Length: 481
Image (cartoon, rainbow, N blue to C red; front, top):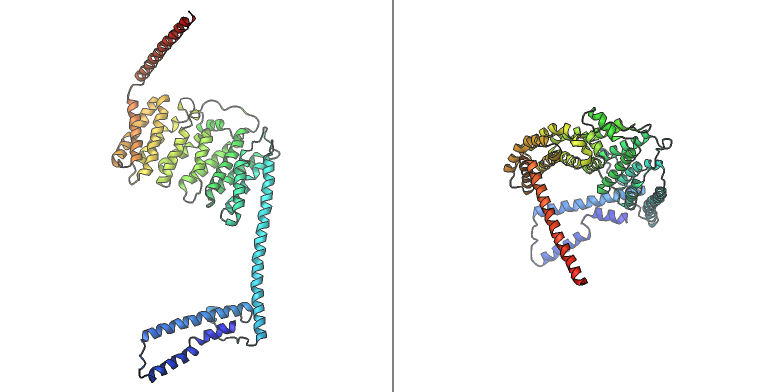
């Protein structure tokens, strides 16, 4: 086969083809017609194509010879040697060459099959291990040591997401994490001998570090990471390893707190300072660092599930309303604050946890709304946050609501005039204007009118009810008679 390839490459287009052309030429001359001269450009183009084909065939032959051991591997580009090794012509040498090539191809196929079988065995072993973990998680009183498994499983999930062959493993790990391990509850008291509080914090720190660096995995990995963070934080809160009330009391410095921190058991609140520092660090990186891959839904879920802890890191959120890295992240900070304001029981008595942040929040909203060059989709979250802020303060702190409304009203009116073509933004500005108009009216008159209307309605309903009851009783008397 190599000899035929070499013969075809060296022939180049001569041989029989040339003889046929000569015969055709002789026939043309014998009939009295002269040979038509060909175009020099066409001859040069055909010659270049033939030389390219010859060169490709020669390279293939050399590669096969080097693979079979008949030729040494090609040296560097500057030391190429044009000397060729003569191909064997006898059938025995050709058969030996074919056997060498067949053995080489067979060895490659066997290596690929062995690697595939090894991957299948590893996959089978991992699936059996996951079945064992699920059996342990199903127990009525699961061990606290199971809390050490979510982080390695998250790493395995991130590695399996990029390999289509591990798709069954990816789905199995995702289901085990979200529906089994993240649903377990460790009964009190906290088993410090089996799992220390410091080791549990190390797992939370590693989960946040993985969430900030991982790039693939899609929505499944993001949801699993959120569930793992919620599991660790819930466990810390249930066993009083993180005491949000005492942490808020410490952060507020005694001002604006909802009362004295409750007295707990020994070790209560031992992770307050490390958890606060960890959350502040990762939130600052999320809003201000370019390569932070932390998911915004994770931050939203954290503020929704642990709102008192969210008010401890509220200064980072308020600062990021106008000081985030770009306009999109400023909108994310506004959305996260809307989620935090939506948790009304966590605001404290008379919005005690919100009041220290109202002046800075109003200033930040005025800055971001007045910023030039922003698109309507970037202006909508600040307008919504201003509406939620004023509505939250309206009932508990009317004076602060008036002050906050007056602080951002002019900027929102200017935005409405500039971006009137954007329907969503225009609707948000209209809601804020309606809320501001309701603040200007007198609340006592509205309450009295509302109470009077309610009383009149109740009185009318009672009269109608009495009439119906009297008619019903008269009907009964007539039937009895």
